[in-house]
Image (cartoon, rainbow, N blue to C red; front, side, top):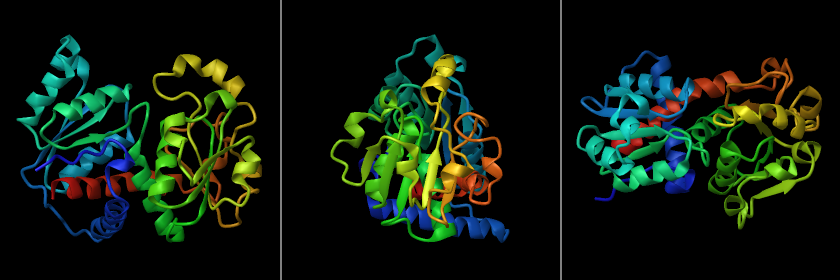
Length: 299
């Protein structure tokens, strides 16, 4: 039987993704009711982090525990990867020891190489190309607050990086319209947006946000690009999401940010506490959506 990986949203069908999100809501209700649900008893996940993490690591580690399984945290400099072992060799070894592997990597090519050599499922916990686990939580949060996102209008403001790429894929998978506004030199990857009939790039944040049901942003200097922060602050001037910009959106619009946020840069100092912000629920839903993902891939 072929191994099912989750490296980007396109690895699963629309039906599979909707099933995971519906299940995430069910698992959340079970958790809030104090009902234990442990279908992954005896299962082990290895988590390899090249980059720092709060939400992804804690949600997967806690999620595996709540589902009855076990998670092992690994840093490359604490494994043979740090001594030059080929990615493929590490993948083959870990495949014989654990049931599933989650990786957070700087270069998406490396997670693709790992998955190609692995005999157990592989999850992308974030790469420079995609952040699919975050989109599961975002879609769950929108469904909880507003119902189906199908045919709704979404605006992405900021850097055309991994979160933007993931929203482009999501626009097709979940059938919503996506308007993207980035500085011209920071547009999303052409191979991701080309041929996508639900996503479009526009010149100004105001145009993107106009009438939107959901407004999303991310930091201007993602992990691995911190040394560009000064130049990026200048390039992204005028792309901050604040209350005035949100006023151009639909009256019932929501605001999301995958966190951590740089207050005073991509968002105004007060935006996380704006009544339209659902970032705290969004962050909390990482636990339940990732539990649903694990259950789906291992159940």
